[in-house]
Image 1 (cartoon, helix red, strand yellow):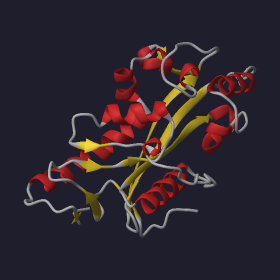
Image 2 (cartoon, rainbow, N blue to C red; image 1 turned 180 degrees about the horizontal axis):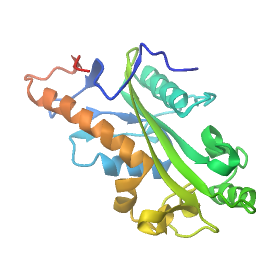
Image 3 (cartoon, rainbow, N blue to C red; image 1 turned 90 degrees about the vertical axis):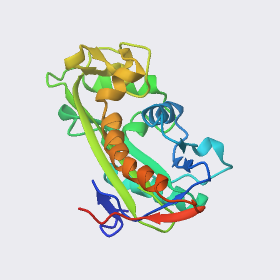
Length: 239
């Protein structure tokens, strides 16, 4: 399902319903059970008066079928579904590796590239096999983040990080395709970087920083209003 242009916006604050407590703590659910992804997002949003539970902090939730043709469609679908089911603002990202020599594959199928039950090692192995005789090893990680509210609009942020596919896996940090994604400006793969290094240049880090810049406006608005109700609407109509 493609996002409805009337419910998704890029680079601006849409009307946003936020759950808060009297300590000004906001709950924003990360719509994932991927521990590596959750750790990255929490690290990038640290320092804010915000609670960031993941799906693991709730009871059983039906899985969302990621059948969109684009990262944006999948991110929007996951965020809006989670917000509706839990009754809380939710954030979801869809990201993947886009390889030039493979016509953009694995793309939106990055997580299922080597089969539904494949491990990260399996996916990296399959990718390197596909790239064995390719001279063009250009690739990019792409990320789209969607923030949705129950029955309301969504924010959309997107970013990419360009690099090349390494000849072999290197490094023990990160997850997914990190060991085979080489970033020339730093001379190392994502899996060789510390979390702070990766967050500064990664696709997800860039998209989250865009979100964080807008989120500052929301937090400022929260602090300016007392007493703080349990639920309120923040709206900024600036383009």
